[in-house]
Length: 249
Image 1 (spheres, helix red, strand yellow):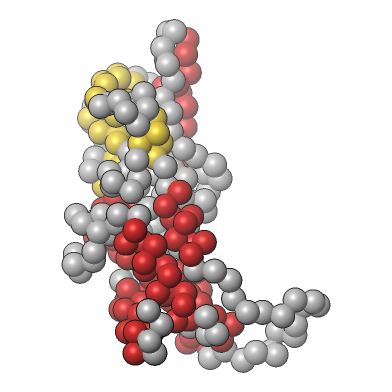
Image 2 (cartoon, helix red, strand yellow; image 1 turned 90 degrees about the horizontal axis):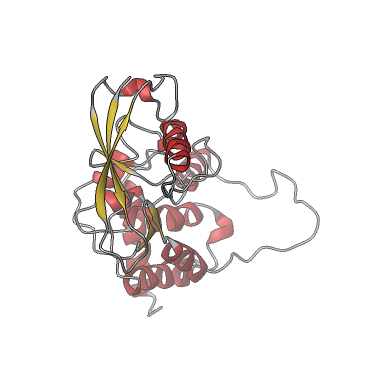
């Protein structure tokens, strides 16, 4: 396959950045997208140029590090997968592929395709911990959880914090990410003691980080690699109203 890559290059957060075009020939359709970028970097290094900076870690669709917008879509074409799970057979010979970092104010570009997503870490930290006794592992049946609640909680817990929801939202909202974290624990008895403080603190931290509001476009659900439902946002809103009625803020 022969491809034309339009890639965003940016030296640091202060640099304006620009698109740079690279021609790629003899690309195997069996390569993953990140393997193709590895080949590009090998060629750039051999040519005495600066390699492209991009994030990756597990390359198994688990860590959420491979945060790229490909042809305007976070994580690229396809559904229910990350960039590292994307293969070049999903593109056509001669195609022009545009590759950008996440575009959101709370995700400043550090270099090229690498963005700072520490705002997500601060939101998680603001949620605090659950009240759970330490010691030996409890019996699996000691705390009964209805099957429906357990399944919904596990669906929410599947969030890998990649930020695709933010990158896809016209408002730059992180509501799906925060809702997944809130909903996960709100459906489990272990998360109930701090449920009001948790939702208030996480929503307030989300707002202070500069994320936008949700206006129900649902692009977040469409691009989420774990296909997390926007119904969790409704659950978070109910938790927030509950906290307000109990005077938690």
